[in-house]
Length: 356
Ligand SMILES: [Zn+2]
Image (tube, rainbow, N blue to C red; front, side, top):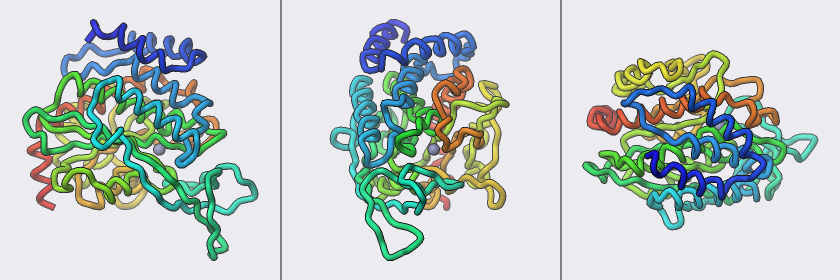
């Protein structure tokens, strides 16, 4: 859509923070030179991807903590972008509010500290309610997911959910890879889907409070806006912008076999080094570590795209300048290419989904 590009860029930039633009325009041009010319790959907009990533990962978002001003600021930005793209809200104002309680780790300070492993339990800066349990207390969270939909042309009553969590650990953290990267990715993919309507409907789910125990994706099922049997697949993106070896994992095929040939086709594009694994019982199984878990628990097939943990994981050093622009863009193209293929062959996944 080159004819729309300048106009869109102007729109996006009007929402961006001025200081961010210089490094990100550089990133855009670097990625552009490495972009593949493969017709089977959706033409996801780089400007939208990198600029929204820069905004979400900026210091001003204060680590996008669920239930805190930074999280609300990120949500406001995302809702305004969805509105400008023109995708349809799945719920009023795109916003599904929820209240939940997150366990908070006792610690010597009140600053957010994530424990090892995911989902992280953390100290928070939001409202806290002490309990009788001497080892933990709880933080009440007023969170909100954002839900948009692109209606399918052939099977509008059948859904693919494309999900990413936009929250992170709060002030002092940027959460650039985790998960400004996945959030910006699904925003940019939503724009492509809106311009190239899929056969099946696609719900774009921006989940809140993942870091505190997948609270947003669990709330999604508490208030499910479509029949559960109509959800055929979840494609979750969490940490997709950097890996020293150019490796991106697609987890889920250990259990969900129908997806594998489609992912093999995408892997053959060599946009990234697409790896399989982290989805079988035993060592480093990611199946319960991000927002695909509530889908998997309900026997809904999933594919989770993400990189292995790096030294900046859940640290203040997970900053936007650490991103590898070409890898990030190619990760997003990989996910988009899979979504495109899965949409075209959703009967095959639906058959497996309803057989379990
Ligand atoms: Zn994450």
